[in-house]
Length: 96
Image (cartoon, rainbow, N blue to C red; front, side, top):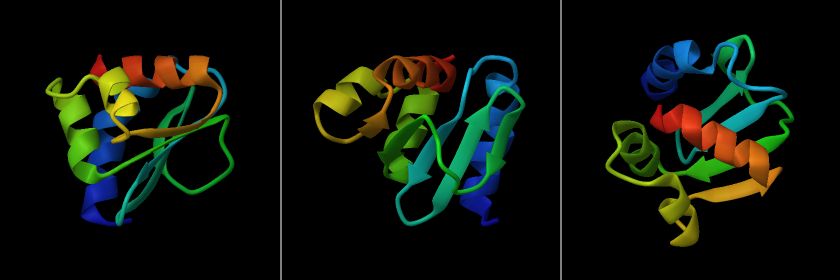
């Protein structure tokens, strides 16, 4: 696991625990992916109910509150595959 992914896992693990039904995957372009589920966050690249894809900079801006995830999606900076309701739930976890 590289430092970028380790940082996401450490940041998102407490936020995701008990907050997600099913699975979500964050694909950080050029760095790898993070899996989120009811047990927390971990490095991984498995199948997921929803996949969010963006650059490291976009995810960092979403996490810091500088970027609204819905606006990132609308502007094409954040791509989503899968269940839209789960994507909204995941964006709430990222910004919470």
